Amino acid sequence: MPTPRFAALMFAALTVPGTAFAADYPAGPITVVVPYAAGGLADNIARPVADALGKVLKQSVIVENKGGAGGVVGTGFVARAKPDGYTLLLTLSAISGLPEADRLLGRKPAFQLDQFVPIARVTADPNLLVVSADAPWKSVADLVADSKQHPTALNYGSSGVYGAMHIPMEMFKAASGAQITHVPFSGGGPAMVSLLGGQIQTAASGPANAGNFIKTGKMRALAHWGSQPLPAYPGLPSLKSLGYDAEFVQWSALMAPAQTPPAVIDTLRNAMRAVTADPALKQVFSNLGSPIEYMDAPEFATYWKADAERVVAAVKKIGKVD
Image 1 (cartoon, rainbow, N blue to C red):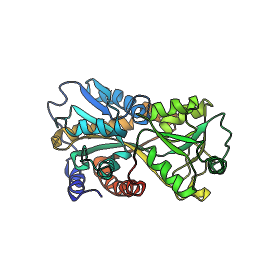
Image 2 (image 1 turned 90 degrees about the vertical axis):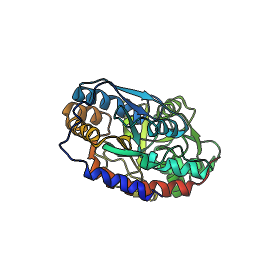
Image 3 (image 1 turned 60 degrees about the vertical axis):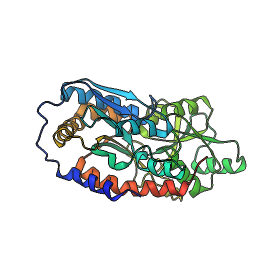
């Protein structure tokens, strides 16, 4: 479970003053590391955010993809980066389960949650259960029934083991008894390409990743993992409303290495407050079907602590994956 030190650091964000600025920051380009391959959910969120952030901070903000091991490689890289505000992390909710996953696999965790301090949450969306537009399944019940009749025929893709596409699908499989084989990819983008190409049959994708494919008629959403109706997808049922006890919110957030100076964190917090309030950026995310759900560091610190407990519990339930 999240450590006491993690909780302490998260709540420490509450003490960062809301008006302080680092006088000489930023003095050069900032790198935002996305710990997944290009084209996935985190990447689709990071690029417009980085562009807007660069305009506010008047410096180049560069997105760098460091995919691998379901997000572990890039996340570990930022955890070890110099805490000066020039190397940041745009991550997803799956970050919370990765240290526990390492422990399950008998490895020393590549990072701990207390090695990061939150800056801002950007989005928070329930995943969508998607299939290709030419798939025969018109409902979740159709998919579940077919998977049980042909238990080795159907595959689902993810951004990696214990990642933000793996955890919710395993929740769904446990709740429904569906027989669908997991095929991990280096990121959500490659998984979506494989779904369109027919190499896999379904996936649990964030709206920002699958939204354009749904709008252009290349994919179809069967349900979502939320607890409330989704305005962008009127009439789309939740898995819970269909009788499947599976709920998962995939959030995205900007974070910095722990020990980054408070004045630098506060500069970034204020910049992200301006960025997420910008109507142009709001429209970009609305078009993706993933509206901005901004949270400043103090509120997000509390939210993250509680969400991390749920994600770690889900990882433990999945258990060791060979």
